[in-house]
Length: 400
Image 1: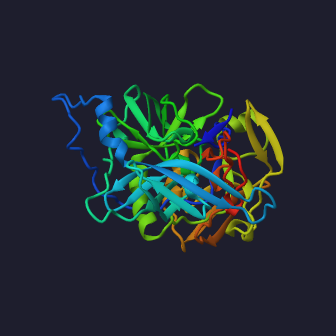
Image 2: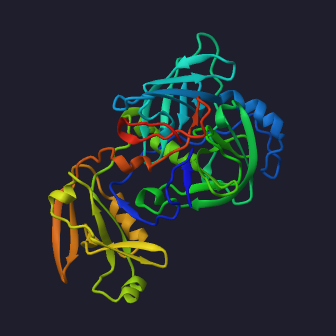
Image 3: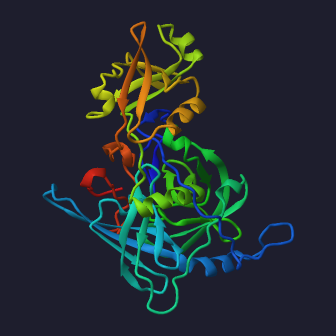
């Protein structure tokens, strides 16, 4: 199975826990309500879809980007397009990080055809969110969309997506919410980012555009599609965007502590199945180079074992506790990680070769790592090719 982020090849069910950091959350302002949305006495919205499009589409922008790969001898310059939505009349635009990362030139075209140079305010590759700023008009205000409440989204409700699929600007598609709290893939980060699944058609170029409820409120930012499926797409919940916005505005990034290892939980059923010495806890599979975990001497796995389609890299340490919290469930893992902060000391209870020991180290800020972009993410190339790959770290060869 392939998932494309605006389309990554993420191996949608790669149930692996990436212990590289934790989100530091900030409170955000209360949800705005739309005076233009026509609500019935029962609480539903009666505005027609054409009227919602007419009202909201002016806030949806066309994003064109240019990237240069200095290490590539040919076709060094690539062009691609995506979508975004104005969330503040002062010129603040919300989009996907993969739409604008490693781009030398970012141009935003408004609904009225005005093209403006955009500045990247901040972005986060893990949650795939970014903020852009464009200059406000000399007179009047920019049209801004109303942000809804993604916690109230229900399976089966009708939703709309507006964006620029394959460069076709201001395109409207409709569908329903197919699922909520969809975890792709299962990591501590994605456990904090339960995606909205929808059958609303999403194509390359839709990335960064709004997913709307029937009141015309933004409930998500379209970000991914499952390439080999029929209309299975995903959106980042808007409440997550509200949570990280203050950090993106003030710091330009989301600050996370760096544990420095990847792994997945070992439960009792796995212990019984493979019948080798294991304890309940977090199986360390990969140690990130240069990380505090590497400097502390933690050990990753060496032998791959596939059980019922699930892959484990055995032979590494097992983390049975983190600062006194036993690692026996995803909830315990999240509780332990939420308490971590940059600069604090983490104490890990480590099981290795039948013996337990404690490992301690100070947590630095987590850097952007090569795997953060999740592989390939789909944009719409200006050249007309069907894909454009965006690779983190400045190398951005063509085709998605």
